[in-house]
Structure formats: structure tokens, C-alpha cells
Image (cartoon, helix red, strand yellow):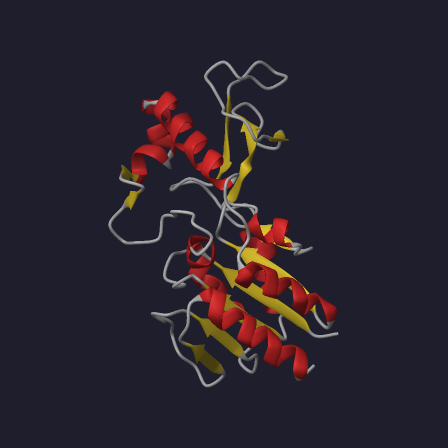
Length: 227
């Protein structure tokens, strides 16, 4: 069974109504990204950071997976499918995808500031005074700017074993995620779904100049017919 690896970013979730950080202006819903998504911002104002992610979490729980998320699930009928996403939402899982790697963490989880491996499922607001079992403050289970990306080596291994690569809703310009393209075998076909494609082209790259909810279902239909 061929292995399809799907790299997804903010563009696929935006069509579900999530306002996500994607542009190069350094703002996320009007916030200076370094004040709400960096260790320094956390140390400076924990209440502000928690409130920011509490709002994102509340927003996430009000939206649903879209046709692009749902179409990717259908690929599992005929292919082994692994999704490597830069998104911190759970829309892939809610749509039914069975293998999802979150490079940048998960919004519906929190972790201890004492032990980063102590991770808890969490759907409510996080407040100052919400402690782990070791009496240390809980924080969003999200990779902030300036922090290492623990799952990057695993993502590299997955990409290295891809027979087909699909890229949806990400410009592949932000590192370290952008570096994953360097690990794709030269002969692996790459399908890039984006209304404003910006990618280092190579012979095996096929550009699908559409929004995710249009381009992904069409691509999935073609791949299933040809499998």
C-alpha cells in the first residue's frame, strides 16, 4: 500500500472559520505574536497569554471540519495516510483522520511548566492557579517561537518514506517545517493545493491553484480512481 504524506497549514483550517496566524505581519488576531507565543511573552504576562489561548480554544470548539479535512479521510480507503500539520487545532482528528502529527502542539492540551512531558487533555479555560500534580502552573501545549520542535525528527522520518506528498494550506516558507521538503525523495510526486502557490518548484510538483475545500476533494477523487 502506497504511503501518502499530507503537510497542512493554516489555510485548510481558515476555511472552517478559524482565524489563524499565517501572514508575515507578525500579528495573530491583532496581537503581537511575540507577546502571546514566545517564552518571553509568557514570563512577561502569563494572564495575557492564557487569555489569548483560552479565546482560541473557545473558537475552535465552535467550528467544524470542512470538506478538505473530510476528503483527506477518504484516502485511507486505498492508501496509508499520515498527516503532518502545523496547525494546533483538532479538525483533522474530528474529521476522522487516524494518523496526525502536530508539529506545533495541540490547543486542546496543556502541559506542566515543571515537566514538559506531563501533558493533559483540556477543553476549558486555563487560569492562573491551574496546577499540575507537582503544583506547577499549566501552560498551553503549543510550541512557541524560540522553542524546539520535538516532533520534527519524527516528521522527517515520515516524509522520507512518502510515496506521494500533498501540501495544503501552507506556503512552506516557515522553518523548520519548510525544511521537510528537503527530505522528500526526488521522484516523489508533490501535489501543492493553494490559491496563491509559493513553493520551490521541481519536476515532480503539480500545482492545484484552488482553495483547500475545492482542490483537495478533486485531488482525492483522482488519486482514488488511479489507485
